[in-house]
Length: 612
Image (cartoon, rainbow, N blue to C red; front, side):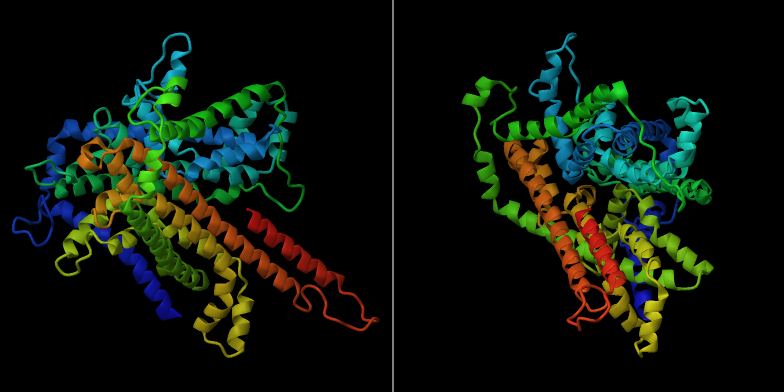
């Protein structure tokens, strides 16, 4: 078991530490690759260049701060408001609202960015058509910096919403009731009671949303070629995507990556220090716990209107814009005349008949499935070893390191992996291969690690001790006792990471080649005017819709299959003598209501888990 844990820890170390080390070395060795190049030497020239280009340096810092910080604040405000409505108010259709907020999560980020670009087209965009019907002749410029900030915030609302909902659900409402009884208004109660109680959780959501936005490339790439050229993600992409006749500036890009890696590390440390005493704000107890439900009264119509506008902007209009682009030969404004005379559905047939579409889809499934498997297996084994080991400085350091990938933006991870594979390519030719993408996608291992660690702590040690007393080795006890109990959590995390892998665009944007590109990159080539012969906007929109439908069917199909397995396991367990239905017995045998009640309760819990 020790050897297995060491192997799992080594895999995670290779996934996280080696690429970042190569990036740091590249920042201090030459303008190109750090090894195998005659001009490579140790120096601080790249950082000196950053400082000499002070105007550019501060422009990148300022633009990134406004873009990421502004989108983070807006998305958090919207997510908190939606979570408050669905959890702490008596608003009608709360379950429907929660579903509508989550639905955009299944849409791949590059698809959402493309949909917003089509929706905001100055001439043919459906949103601008709607705005022209209002007084004032309003038109939204899709390439304005402020528009980018709003679009980025709309694409990220679901993530903080999913994290804020359990925080609000777990907060005892008696404290808010006490404030209300004391004469405080709802704004005063929110400011002086609710937000201080939620501060640790909200700070964590803020930091993670900030890091997520910092590593996002889709919106800057599609919207920000001019106004957003100084955003960090696009800046890094531009430095390594050299124009004709120019060499890529890997060293300078690595220096930029180091600067922003320090920023995200500081943000992560601030979050850890701010939340180390989070238990002081715990409000759930076993006595009298109940959430407060706020009666909206006359505010119900405005709240429902706000939710409708949000749904319109995040789901209805973007998907309609994609569909309209897929059935028209070129960008034209929507009208019933155009609908009757200029629409066609040939783009869907072209996509389904395109062999490269199916090849890219197959590569996407292989990359997403392989990376999710590597991350879940390595993280689960290491999490078990750390959770069951003694709490020493070493285990605490390993625990923090295994959790650290959440502090690495995707754009930095993608660039660091790109440098690593370029450096080792003469010895291990992985650059541009599917194997390289599988390894790169696995860097989000901390998602699986934290889930596995929490799930291990919920398993009592008596089960493993019983296996040891029965003659099993620690490895056999882990494999035969612990693993079956961890499988529901592992499967749930695997599905989540698989969906993230199918949606991923930032990592393959740095690593993929035409022979290894997943579907997200191939679809971007079809909607990018610079792609020459691949450019086909109607086929790209049709592919985006098919891609979204496939992600939905695969993701929810896997969850449905896992729920069936969980329900079947619970039913089989309820049929075991002593746990569920009693075996045939004599008429005078006493009933066993307690054991049956326990089995029934377990079955209900399994069904509830399956429903979730």
